[in-house]
Amino acid sequence: MRITRRAEFSASHFCRRADWSDEQNRAVYGEAANPLGHGHNWVVEVTLEGEPDPVTGMVVDLKALKEILQREVVEPMDHRFLNHEVPPFDRVVPTAENVAREIWRRLEPRVNGPRRRLHAVRVYETEDYFVDCEGAPA
Amino acid sequence: MTVTRRYRFSASHRLHNPALSEEANRAVYGKCNNPLGHGHDYILEVSVRGPVDQETGRVLDPARLDRLVRDRVLAALDHRDLNAVMPDLRGAPPTSENLLALIWQRLEQGWPEAFTPDRRLLRLRLRETRRNSFEMMEEEQE
Image 1 (cartoon, rainbow over the protein chains, first blue to last red):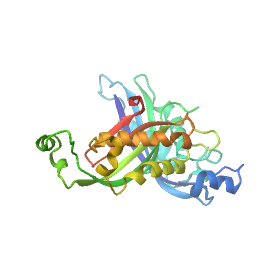
Image 2: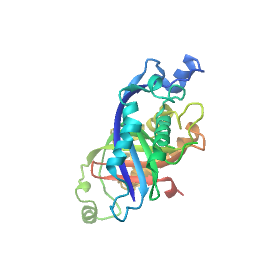
Image 3: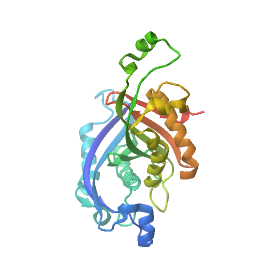
């Protein structure tokens, strides 16, 4: 059985590589390369897969999951400038793909258990653009 | 990693199969058989699976996907009468099922120009109304 919990945070970012010229960054990332940044209302959907506990009837205690999401994702990222304030995005370009991988890294060791494992992290950068990370990032 | 982008188009259609009688068409398609047709604001979700490029941190350039969808799909369908567009479907009625197959085929045709083979069209989802949506997966393709 799969269970999904949603969390939201608002944060600014820009997409550019320090080792590329302005022109290169502009060509690859378009408007998102503007070094002054821009913001999004990011939405994260975290899906766990597992068997319900025979006693509680739950795959995961949603309150505990909510707290993990709050501590690992929302508190450090909400109303922050990802590139300047949230490592590793001072070094890693905070594309939606990399944000999803980072959230996977932060959550996996904290949500996996004998009866369940992290199945997917979906990150909506906008309503019309989202990525699904399914499996540990390389 | 899978990237999904959402697009919108509005189009009219009438569900009617000329191979069936008027009565059978009404029985099969109900209101959707109204001779003057009706329209929807469709939402199309295009999902692409591939590795995250080491350099860019992205699976694909979204502008490239936008161009492909715009040129191959939206230009042909947005604000059109789908029954007139559907000659592509050789007379098959413009149900969302048939429409999805047409969209898949059109994207597939433009794919090699837009993306390397390790970026694969994984899934199309078409939302006809808030209550009806249709999905087609890569493994359904021959």
